[in-house]
Image (cartoon, rainbow, N blue to C red; front, side, top):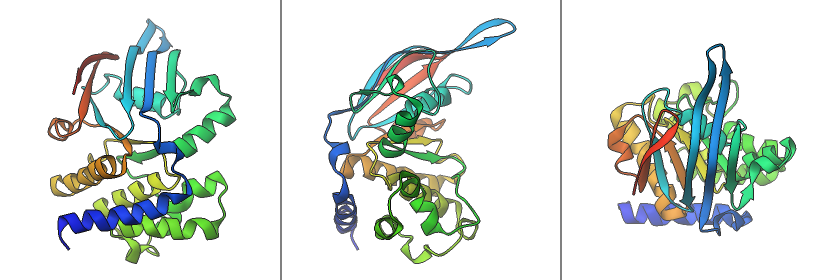
Length: 253
């Protein structure tokens, strides 16, 4: 199958899968971060993990966040993903100030609006690939009979439908990361947060995973925010934001 036909085939799969909810993809601005600070108390005084972070990201944009270890990249990703609260400032997802919500509402936003991809895959080895992909929708409360076809469609899109009954331990690193990508798509999120998604992979497999993320952005309007140490991959994204000492050092478009 040619590359163009492959894209067309997969676009049809993903479009059919997402008919259950297109509302997440209609806003032009997916994310806005406003005057964001994260401050920790220490015996030596206050430590600023993040300081006065401001930027916005459009729907469908592929943005990488780069910077040295300890610069605040992962802390920033945790704020965007509503995994931790800022000390000061706001994060808007789809125009909603998420930290103005209560904990239950934040959990709902995190589950429905955000997909997560981790360097270590974070799959559950005691259960099947299919069940791993279904987990976000199970947490959401969807009925299993409704979500099995959707999970299988994503596995088909990523070339893993024939391995749906396998356990993660039986797959290669690249295959496990593709399972994690399928899982991140299950609730049709506006934003996918990828924390060093190629960090545990060899160069060839890492490039394949990166190209899948780029396809999700360019063809299917998923907003991808990727933390990476790989400057070569960062240069291939639509934009990269360099973080240094907890602040935005440069924003390259």
